[in-house]
Image 1: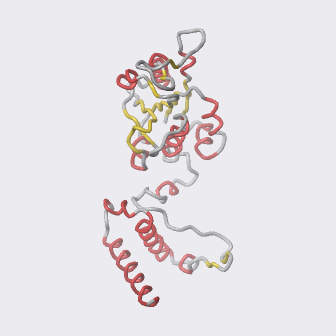
Image 2: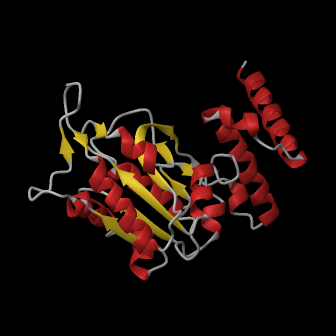
Image 3: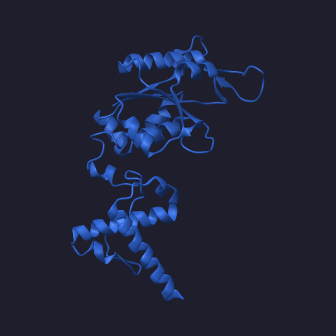
Length: 253
């Protein structure tokens, strides 16, 4: 997969990719990453990428021309003239696992990391295919959101993870939150690892994990269950979970 990031702080992106599985995937070439600095595409000797907003007001606005030239350079570098261009923006739709999965299937992708008060709307109208947000808050720039998107989709690209099953057993991959995880020692500060995980019955382990995923989702993100595709087994696990809860409540009374 080819990914481009437009940023006036390329070193910030490079530093973040010095560690971790996605950074290693970039170094190996499993993910081809190129950075495009708008300052390299300015038309004045001062390399200005921003100017005062028409109509007045605080802050500065990023110029359309350097950004447009970055898009043209990125499309040439990727060899994909129709490559999707995504602007990281608090005004965009919320980025989630479903979107990450969709983007990971693309051959190429360009992420725009804005700065200052905003970007000239004419650039957005002409060049941006979609705006994405990582949450309802404002950051000082789009680099961190772009890195979040890159990390989320990069983990789904073939070759990034040493064990591909890791990406299919995590939170949101199946519409549920992940089940609890345990490792050695067997007892930590008086708390024991659940017996089912030690008994060697793999079917029982799978059933326990699925049930705990449903339980955790119900407790922490019940909204995810509204669109969950309930299998017969899931309904049975939920029923047994509900029965155990009622039994526990009766004992406490």
